[in-house]
Length: 415
Figure 1 (cartoon, rainbow, N blue to C red):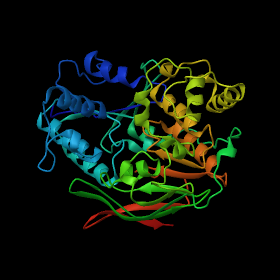
Figure 2 (cartoon, rainbow, N blue to C red; figure 1 turned 90 degrees about the vertical axis):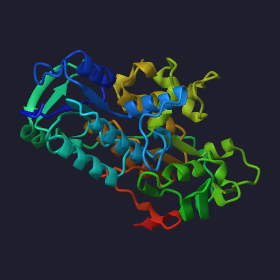
Figure 3 (cartoon, rainbow, N blue to C red; figure 1 turned 180 degrees about the vertical axis):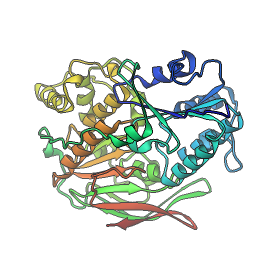
Figure 4 (cartoon, rainbow, N blue to C red; figure 1 turned 90 degrees about the horizontal axis):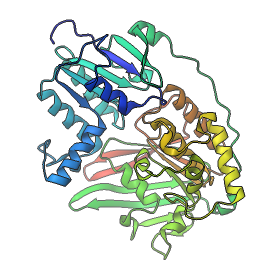
């Protein structure tokens, strides 16, 4: 495999069945007419591979990958996991490496590390990259394949032709459905943290965090992998017991003053792609969206006519392809759009979106960003957008950046 390497990219939309596509490439010779992989030794570089290895660690106490700093994948940050998997798979000396959304959920430093390592590895090993965004195409990929909704190859082109055509870029105008604003607290700021610090065992994660979030502010929360972004978000949403004993005020409620978690959650809309794994039943899209009103996994009481009407308005805004479908019938990208609508249906005073555009294609990313901007235009709704990716046209008002110190990570406001 050291000669005539034809590094190939496969550009997907959210309507493609990615899981089946990856299987068809590695096991059923989907690309053999373009690059013959049948009979070759291949590895899949993917978050799904990491999940399987972590499952092996827990089920069978079988640790395949470790580092000097971490004894297993399950103890690593997402960036550490990605780097460790890449190093281990390269050491296996495969004939080809199949990359699944290689930049997903890793910080900029890790992205640069992965890009540099793969570029060197591509000198001797065939690379096949599956990706959703034009901007994610690796620089050494020379041939790009586009597949349809049935994973059939519809176009093969060179890099120059692919990068020269970005498709139509149009703004989507959203008229948001009416929310239940009677639930909104009258307090301002909505959130206030004073000198908040968090330690797990002997490891200091957050140190002296001071952050005030007012009504209608649009924040992007940034920081490297392992900097404590997830810990910070879980404290804001009421899910982290480390918040007790800290100087935290949420929606006018002093943390630890006798409030329940539901006293906090009724004011928050929240979405992260990891939530999708909790929803495995054949619920309708309508019921999925309605469940956001009570933050429940499924519906256990009959929805009111008003709730159904509001859910239908969100479905109409998402598009006709979402009508009369179950959640499980949707593609991964479509499911994530539904989960965003689920977070938004109650028009909470605070909306937290955690890496929401992972595995969204170019078109749906543009639609999503326009939707976020429409929500940001409502003066009563504050947004915390957590992401390593700087999305075009997102335009947050402020950034809260977690930065490393000698004793964990602290935060600073960047205007």
